[in-house]
Image (cartoon, rainbow, N blue to C red):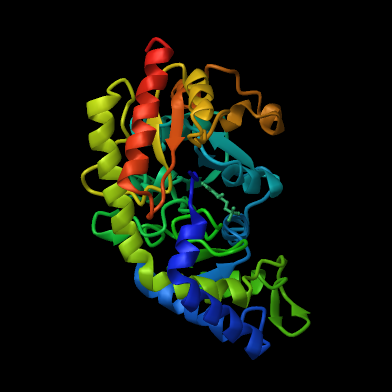
Length: 376
Ligand SMILES: Cc1ncc(COP(=O)(O)O)c(C=O)c1O
């Protein structure tokens, strides 16, 4: 059994993917070019965003969005400590400061109330908050309307880290098209994944799009003319072709993920009621990039499941404010209690569109046995 079965997906669409790759090999156009532009247009239409800029990864997409806002030393960005390192890494790479705010215990996403408190605190302390970076964790958007409203009132920008939520719906709109910037990742294991690194920034204004397009090619306005500082942040054409080949199947895959999630929910509540199920708010959907439950004695449960050859993962075992790389921020343990508790309890189960009902039954039965053997 695999945690995410990419081989099965490749076997399903093999002809389309192989022929897309061969098309690029024959074209001789390997970096950017018409395949990448086609992908940008296709995904911008899907998201309902006016502009899409393909990037070399989700991380580079987040970095470029911050660079487009001119973020630098002294600036502060509010974000969550319960996410993959990339979200806060890019803030620090620009010598700005992440302001970590605690999460909601049921959705694991940023708490709007806590953002408000942090804004007040930073105002009193003379901080320079410039933007908010909510993460749409595990495939479900945070309270984006409330976050956008708060940001608009305070004159801040919002970057949705949508690296796990491409395709998710929020109040009738798609993740990535909900705020000034939406950034996603096409890392192979993501809901829409390529066969290498890749990402995309969605934005709502032509000026920002132009800036991002220049910044992803070393700030170049025309050949060997560099007006602004940039990076090598381009997507290559083979990855774009793979994504274009996979995309026609994507909405069906989202349905399959939803069906698999529903099946897990039913099985778990019947056979392993001690596991806390994921919560998806009524006004949105999750694409279940991860299917993550909470369990007591999580590390013992993981060991038991390993013995039964059930692959699991922990997203994420140590919140960012407790990582060594952020020790200079001096945030004491206990300061962000919901994130800390979540980090000790979360457990992601195998999840992908092709998971079989029998596999899910086996996983849930093993989890039930694990909980029993751990005395839960
Ligand atoms: C929440 C989050 N942010 C950022 C990233 C970075 O994306 P990438 O791996 O494409 O750089 C990821 C993916 O790994 C992620 O899950």
